[in-house]
Length: 388
Image (spheres, rainbow, N blue to C red):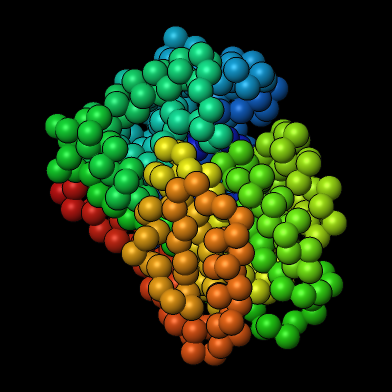
């Protein structure tokens, strides 16, 4: 029997022009021989078309938000505000019942009452973040309300899931502490890398002029990054170039705008997916300067294995989930309230081995073992076992 996969996502497919784990998993499922179709179920702005077919063949099904203001997104987690909007989907799936099995994959804890609109053959929760926590780590009454609403939504989903996948051991322990009754159905599968994509020729035409040591971050520019630290590094090492590649997810925050005033900071904005590997080759060292927050402790950054797949050494901050990958000449992890000087020293130390062929091969070898195809095949194996 062929299978329809419904994936609950954070937003429309090209929301911020970044490719996350959920995008790669949707594309993986789309390629499987037994797949009938993949539906990308997501919240979206009002006036967004309800159903569209994307270029990759995946169907995008949008449940419009209560309003377009960020504060109104809480309605995604409360059935009263979205239940009627799911009728089109439930009617569509009802027509397919019997001819296809239908599986529901949560990658975001929205629409927790989906189990009521249809008799799913299986429900799985792929948890990649502490969704209720603030990226910046700051507390407010609004963030407290958001935390309570999302926690309740997530607990409902965990209770209905056949199994739960976490992208870090920290996340797994956090979920177990909240829902101890379900500890035996919670697994850890870290983020991976599209290894082949990053095997670019190093002597290809450079996208930017390179002058001196270049360190950089590639990904969404969000409040989880320590902009003050980056700014201090830029001031203390004016001969270095700091490259930031990715869309502004800070809403032009004062901290980010101030950072861009430094003459040795270069920000490209959003770039096409097929150019990410080219920008990787512009770097000597990849950096992941994350703040010391609960949110950051739980994540496993997509960029770690992408940097390594490109042969680049990496300096990370406040990412305990990555501790086991720390290795001389490969990856250095700094923890706690990191100052500029220790970060600079780590970069200088890593720069000595950046072009060493032995270390380059070691970095690539480590990344190759974490190819998305390998990870997703293992997840599907769990999926088949629990379906029996």
